[in-house]
Length: 203
Length: 203
DNA sequence: TTGACAAAATGAACGCCGTTCAATAAATTA
DNA sequence: TAATTTATTGAACGGCGTTCATTTTGTCAA
Image (cartoon, rainbow over the protein chains, first blue to last red):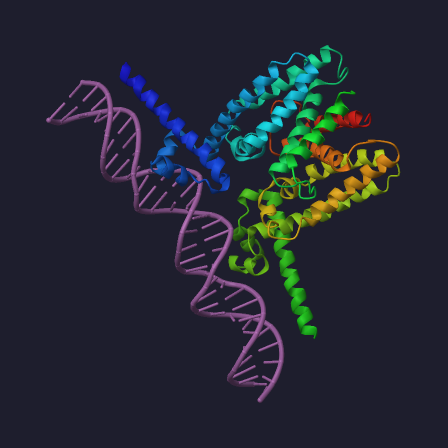
């Protein structure tokens, strides 16, 4: 059955090409200027072809976000190497912000835009979100095992911590930091997160 | 010159009608389904007329967001009545979340969507954002005057605190809380913010 | 009251968009 | 080679934001 396999492989290749091209266009020109027609033109296929590989634009965007998560998990891998759980948590925050600044379009798809989540509605679940979240809760659990955060619910803790970093990143990505005339927004963001780390280390 | 005044008044009235209708459609059907044509039909004018009152859709959305800020400031007024600045800060967080849950569409326009901010780019500044932010920094300053947060930069503090609450609210509004199977998201959000309040009160 | 002028509103038209689907082309199988 | 399955095409549909020549409405002087 070599032919079947080749066809399957070719199908995956075109699917991947669509995803890569979409991600690239998205990164370069932003979501708003990246139409299905533009993607089709970039891969030199007709618009209709994309719909053989993806149900609609929402699904395509969701699958691009999955690519973002793969990259995100690579960023996270550097966190696992650290021993001290509280130090892991610090590093996680740093890495999270770094990812958002390195790949703002991916971050947008993964954590801000509505479109990708629409395609998940009738689906089973948000696997990538849960996996990422698992990384955070595991670290928090280890922190608790060495005495931090005792008595607090782990879900509430994780939402608090995730929310804080996500909030700062989102305000920046969606251009809501006009009132801070700070020339280097990344520095301001990192300093704000530093204070946050001070605060929670006393819990 | 009574006629001039009446014409000016009528002009403002139609402008207000457009804004109110847009806000209402936005609240009921969401941004994505609220087209300029739909707004025009709702007010029983032709689409072209809207462009006599607003440069483009971004500007219209920005002006709707200004309405949101007016409502937001009313919410904030209940904070001013409190004496103790740390208690003010607590209340500010509560009121902020309540506003976001009561008026998710306004919140989206004010703090998440890209479109309204585009119209501000060539404009002078984001007045409403700065005013809101001023409320927060004033409270933080008062907290510092009674001994809290000493040694920390007020901008970094404010970004940290705003970011935390905004982050939690945004994750909820943009449907990124699937991993918390909590039946009552508001409760979870409030509990998370409670922990945050515990944390920063030790700073 | 009438006609000239200005202001406001219209809606067809432009060039986009996401999406569908009958027609066509290409690849596989018999 | 012919029949059949699979993949691709691109015109067409309805909708979008926006523009602008045309028409309607309102104002004021003669």
